[in-house]
Image (cartoon, rainbow, N blue to C red; front, side):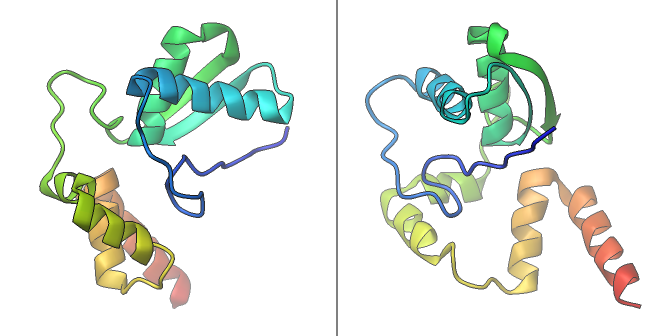
Length: 139
């Protein structure tokens, strides 16, 4: 069974994207169903973290006929009413810091900075396990 790992609009290697116009939930469902349509896939199982997890849950609710299942790793962005963004997410959402971060994203990142981003996205235990596994393979 084929696997695909598309970048969300405006993330990783995807071109910049202005999240304006339709409500975020409608855009999110449109992104995932659009990827499925573009690949000629009727239904899929999704794996997502943070924003990808939120997109997956909203698509499962709004287009259940397209979702076989979902695996949500970490907190699915701010999909839950009690969820709050952390300082880093607020900074990245600001016009100036957000533009600088998008510009710098493709650049090599020092390991401590990458580890901090991983800890913020997946939680400190996951970041520590990832670092431990990397060191144990290098021995």
